[in-house]
Length: 116
Image 1 (tube, rainbow, N blue to C red):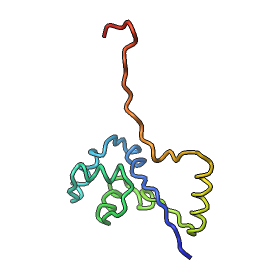
Image 2: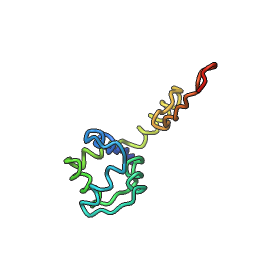
Image 3: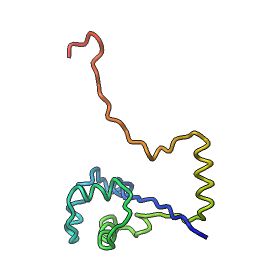
Image 4: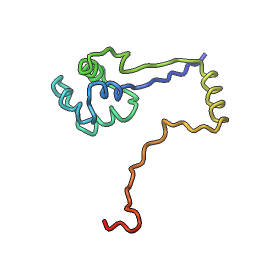
């Protein structure tokens, strides 16, 4: 039987625990461990769920955050039929998947009569 594997990349949680607010905060710690990546490459590691990652980078991230690989990545494996049934059930509820939405920058507009 075919199995579907879903995973959750939890680097943003670990960054928040270590008071790292931006992906560029990881550039220097990675460089100290012999990993030279551009700011845009590090941003992609942080902002997107990577499809593949080097073991050297994974080990460096574990060292930076003082954690194990299972703290960075959690996964579940289920039968393919179960996944299809879940997707069909979630589609029929009409509830959107909030992981697909990004916040929109707010624009402050002065009220009428305000001389700014």
